[in-house]
Length: 543
Image (tube, rainbow, N blue to C red):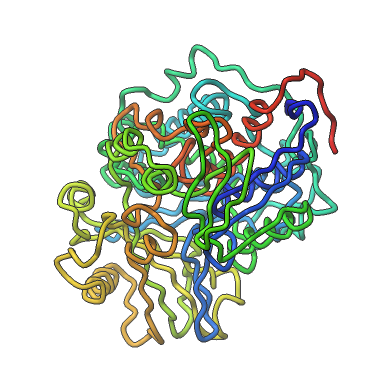
C-alpha cells in the first residue's frame, strides 16, 4: 500500500526524459495526486521504444517482444495483444534448427529432437529458471537493494492458460481485444493500477536460488552437454548487453518469463505501447513538454530544487526523476565525479548495429523472431568486449513482424529489423565502414539460409553513434553498464539519488534495461517518492 504524502502535500514533480520507465513513474505519481511534468528532448515519448517508417514499411528500432504484459495491463493501459506460439527460431552454424515455444513441454521435445537426451536437461534448466525468477521477484525486482517496497508483478494466468478475468487468449493468432482502459483488471491503491497486496519478504534460500558466483556460461554447462544448447542459454546475456562468459547466471532466468507468461506482440508494433502510455498520461493530467531539453538538475547540498531547460527557464520542483542515462546525470546534469567513476568501472554494455531491410516477396515459413548464430560465440564476445570491434562472424537477430501483422509492410513484402551486437563507441573507429559491415552481415546470412540477393528494396542502417546522439546513451550503449561479474547487478546506480528528492529510472539504473525491468523501476521510484515524502501511517484507498 502506498504511503501517504507529506501532510497531504501535493509535490511538484519533474520527470527528465520520456522513456517507458519515466512514463510509468509519471503516471503513478500523477494518480497519487502530485503535479507531474515530463520534459522530453525528442518530439515523441517512448525513448528507445520507437520505429522507423519509409515507403510503407515500418521497422522496430527498439524492443520487439513484450514479456510480462501484466505490468502494463495493471496500469489500465489498453493494448491489442497477440501471443506468439513460437517464441523464437534458432539456427546454428551447422545448419541445425531449434524452435522454442510458449509450451515448455513442446520446447523440451524440440530440444530432444535437436540433441537426443538433452530434453531432460532443458526441463531441469527451466525449473531452475523458475526458482531463480521467484527469488528475483521477491527481492531484486521488488525494490532497491535496501529491500523490497512494491509487491512483485505476478502471473496473470490461471490453470486454464488464460489471463484472468478473461480478455486475453493464449495461442498464436489470437488477439487480445483492447484489454485495459475501462475494462482494466487493475486493483491497487492511489489510482495507480497496482495490486494492493503485501510487500514480499526475502527468503534465506533466495541468495542460493540465483546461483551466486556462477557465470551464465557456467550455468549452461551445468545443464547441457551439447555446445549448441549452451550457446542458446548464453544468448540470454545479450538481453542485458553483456558477455555470457562474465555475466552472472541470474540472467538465465529469462526462459521462466517467456515460457511462463509468454511472449507477446502489440498489433501495429510495440511503439503502440508508448502511444497507449502517452494517452494514459494525458488522461491523468500529466503536463508533457516534448522537444524540451533539460541541461541541469538544480540542487543544493541537501536536496533538489528543480531543473533548467536549454532555453534557460528554471522550473522549480520538490522531486526530480531522471529517466536518462545515469552517466549523463552524473556527468552533465548534476556533475558527480565519484559516481561517474563508479559507473565507468562497470564497463559499457554492448550497443547495436541495426539493419532495416525492405524485403521484396514473402518468405515461406518465416517466424516472427529468429536468431542466426555465429560459429564461435566466445570469439564473437571477445570481439565485442575485448577487441572492441564488430564481430567478424556475428550472430544476427531477425525480427519479421510481417509474419503476424500485414500492416508493417506493403502487400507482397516484408519488413526485417536485423540486429547485430557490436561494441559501444564511435563506429568511425571500426576497421570497416558501417556500409561495408552491412555487406559482411548479409553475406553471413546468405551462407546460413537467409539470402536476400535481389530482394532488397532498400536497406537503412542505425549505428551506435545514432543511438548515442538520439537517446543520449553513453557511447550508444543500450543498457548503460554491462553485467560483468557476480556482483554486477548490485553495482548499478540505485533508484535514489544523492540528494533528497532525486530519483533515477531507466535501463542504466536498478533493476536494469528492457521493457519489464524499466516498468518495474518506474513502480519502485513511485513508491520511494511516496515513502520519502510521507510522515503518516494512514492508508489510502484508490483515488
